Image 1 (cartoon, rainbow, N blue to C red):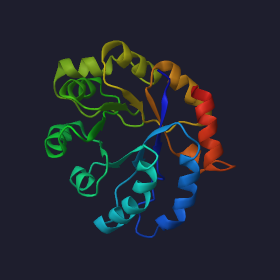
Image 2: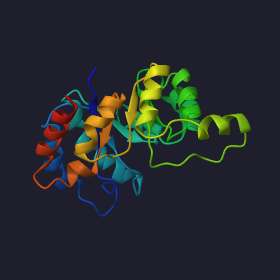
Image 3: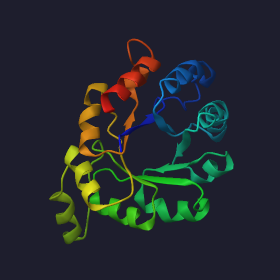
Image 4: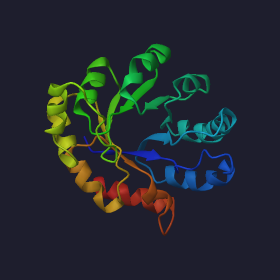
Length: 217
């Protein structure tokens, strides 16, 4: 299976001073580039109304293209607002989120570089496990777990390790430049999260997404 694109909206989009209506045009341009399997409304909203408005504007555009639309951490509003699921930044919240959402919603978990957390949520039924080399390991009290974590693979090798050991899909959440996409695909990422390179592209988001698709084809 070829890698697919996991698109993150700009990290500051959910600030109260941002105009999501103005973002609608470049967002559509990105979706028109094709090859996007999932969109994450990235970041934490200043308040519920800001989140709700962003979802109301962006979600229909996304879902009508058969692209999954997720929000971060707030699994209660993910269900209330009709999103396809939630992306959790804390593996410890998986059980509660799954119990609230049930099996008809996507529950993915960002495990940072923790293989231990990834195995636990993967075996518990997470729809995907995300690895994020921008997040350090948490403090670990159990010496056996600490040895397992500290002695494990990092970077691209972490993606390859997962593919040889586990079956749930893995997402690379490193927000890589376009020219690095092929390396992540070759390493075994089922989905490649990309953000900055799309919204800061010198041409336009459609061109940026097209370039990513060409890199991982």
